[in-house]
Image (cartoon, rainbow, N blue to C red):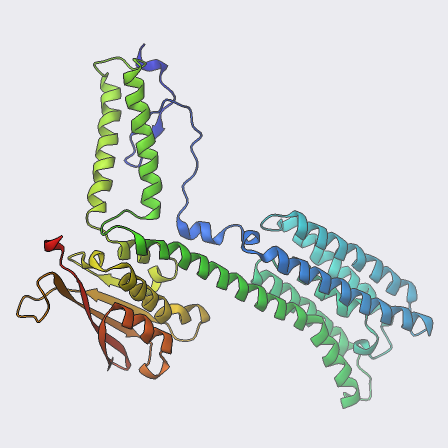
Amino acid sequence: MSASTFSAPEENTLGVVITGGRKRVKQPRRSGRAANSAHHSSLGLAFIGLGAAILVVLRAVYGSSWFIALWGVGEYARPLAALAAWIVLAAVIAGAIIAARVVNDRLPDWVFALIITGIAVATALDVVSIWGLQDIGHYATAAVAAATTLLAIVTVRGPIEILVATGGLGLALAIVMFLDAPAGGLTADWIAPQVTALGAAVLPVIIGVIIVEAFRRMVQVELDRVLTQSAVSAPRFAVGMLASEELARLDLAAEELLDSIATRKTALPLSPKMASIAASLATELRLHLIEGRRETWLYHAISESELLGKSVTLIDKSSLAGLLDPSQRDGLLSTAWLLVSDVTKGAQSRTVTVQIGPVEPGESELPSNKLLIPIAITTTGIPRNRVDPSIWDAIGMVGRYADSTQEGSLRVDIECIVDNPADQ
């Protein structure tokens, strides 16, 4: 059977088409960093969103209780406007909670705009109902509870968007408070309820955003570390996680091509087109194998980590990191993590340079089956007196060390003893 009966071609990493025995849908490739930033709801934020929704409902119940009490004593200048405000706000709260529970990742822009509009309408109606009483902070109910509604969608929208919307609502509320201030001047008795009302309106949302972002960052960093930690048990020379996916794809394509030839679906000798496909597959596999003989587990652990890749530089020209045993690997990797972990918390930027080797020939008291590898860890932005005690425990797992200060930052020199590969 001719080659034309073979399945549809697929483009490889060299830009050359390859083919396979089964028709497969080509999926877009995403890096590990892009995958980490996607699907926030999969990080356990759904449980936080449920708690936030319960808090929004409780805040609405508290505010509506005050509304009923003020309605009963006839405090409202325009009671129908206050009632309309609460009807609109109840609808917005229900819609926001339902939308947040239905959406898997990110709330659509038009839904977010609709929620903001509903909150603004409820706030405006509540302000209209008490305008002229010269004490909006004391009498406002729906206007104070409206901004808290944003807590219901804090896990499905960006923190900046939530904070900007909350800040805008808080600013608008502050402006109308001062516009409706008493003519006799601003007194302490008047200012206190206004500040309290503004705090009750915006602070819950700000605190909610901080909590959600801290949790999201913590989970993403831990997931990144778990994925990186798998490199500890890798062979001395290995391919990374992303390259493994590419190798699996190339392996499948090669198997299907060979199977096609074995079952005579592809005629021999190969046509120029099929020969070019086979050559490109062989070239790609060869390139990956060559890379796998140069790159150690530590190279992949650093380069494929979102946190370490930004802050850690590895110098290992002789690929000596592959000689470390699992315990030493774990200690070295943990040291790098602990040294740069505060980068996510802001403050001063931290960088770490890990230089492994070179091994200097000379007399040594070590037996012939052992090898001394010097490891130098130099840092910037990490004062010696700010180093966490757990870092010293991790460094001790690698080998004997001596610490010093270099340009106001920490430097650690480690003597790492490993098995001599010449005796293996």
